[in-house]
Each structure stands twice: as C-alpha cells, then as structure tokens.
Image 1 (spheres, rainbow, N blue to C red):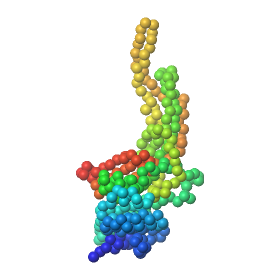
Image 2: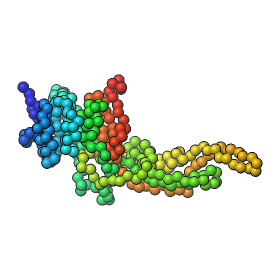
Image 3: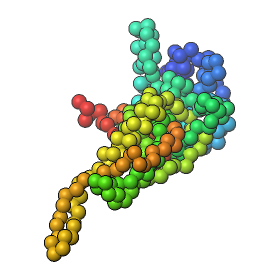
Image 4: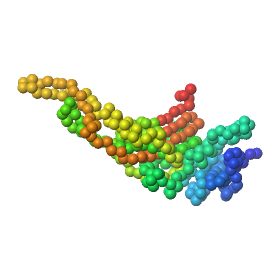
Length: 307
C-alpha cells in the first residue's frame, strides 16, 4: 500500500529534489532550497502539537499535508509561515506529476509556488539607491487566511504578493470662476500594476520587511505617468455643480455654478513607492483576493459562477 510519505516523495522528486526523512518530516533539498512536508493522514492532537513545536526551527518552507479536514482551532495554532495542503491539493499534485511523466512536459504546480512565489526577501536586499522598502504591515495572518478561505472556497494555495503603489499628497484651492471658495487636500495612491487610482485616508505606517514569505511585484508604469493620473483624478473628484444663492437688493437668486480645483495654484507631491500586501488564494471551489493590510476581501470568484 502506498503511504502519504511515498506520495510526498514522488511529488518532490518530480521537481528534482533529493528527498530524505528528518524526524516526522519528508525533506526535499535542491541547491539552496529546502522543503519540509509534515504528513498528516489522520487526526492526531499529538502530531499537531509536534509541528507547532518544531516547525519554527526549520530553515525552509514547511507544509502540512493533511488528508483529513482540520478544525479552525488547529489551523490557528500553526506557526506563522506553515502552508497547508488539504486532500484535494495533494491529489492535484499527484495527478499533475503523473500526467507530466506521461506527456513529457512540465506544468506549473502547487509545489512550484512554494519556492518560486513564497520566497522571503533577505534583510540585506534593498531597492536601488540603498533605500529600505516601505511595506504596509500585515493585519491578516496566514492562519486567518487559511480559516477564511477554507470555508468560502476550500482554499489550498495561499500566496502573499506585495503590490506596488505610488503615493501622492495634494492640496488644491477650489474656485468658482475667478473667486476662491475653499480648498481640498488628501492622499491618493496609484496601483503601479493596474493604474487604478484610489483615495487613501492617510499615509500608512510601514515596515522595511515581512517575516511571512512573499513575492514582491515590480511596477509597470513610471512615477511620471502616475503623477498625471493623480492630477486627472483630483480634477475629476473635486469638480462639481453647486447651487449658489445671491442677494441682489430685495431679490434672492439661485444660480447654478461649477466648482473646480485650480491645480496650477495647488501642490501635488509624490511620497514614493509603497507596497501593499495582498493574499491570493486558490481553492477547490474558486479563488479569492484579500487585502492583507486591512483584511478586506477584494474579490471572490466561485467556479460554478464562471460557467
């Protein structure tokens, strides 16, 4: 009878890993990459305590391969950084491995995400010019994402990506014709991948690095283009029609006027590049995208809804 340990060994060997046994873990090594799979074929409180105790001391990616459903309390007790594969994920990888062997071609699998997308950025690596990265802190941990996605979409692949945003502050006067009637100020962020422009309530606090494994995405537009998008956004957001009441002797008149910002008299200031952490989750029932800095679900698509 084939054991779960043998299945995990097959999955890793298909990617060229040298596989051995380290205590309860099935370890795969290749160049400077190390993967530690903890086989969990049946419910065992002792095994959950063991992985909670030992996973933090391992230098590499740790995966709990569970063939039985896990309670939310068990998931919450897992150390930060542990990836969970459920039965569907294991079956998916076994099927992919054997199909690849038949057709002689490699396809992207869940195991590739472990060492291609979830690689921590070493503290010594900083952007050009030696400046530290400005990363918005996590408020949604891996354990919380696992719990949320398990209920919603049967999540088995949890990937953290850092999405670059150009941040700007602005302060512009508001005019009706040639008369100034006030001013507006705010913070605007431009997604450097999608070019989406959004107002932010404030400049967020940042950290120079994350302990959680992640992939940092690179901007696809320059700051100058983002600056132009912000100016257009401010112009659009603060241009409006308004009823203005005028007194003319004994006569009260209501006049419809246009309020518009004067960008030529205002100030739009670039604040630099900020990285927003985003959880991308693939599941047996669909996919989810969550803002890891706020906990907000950005999108949730179910496979049955796409048919």
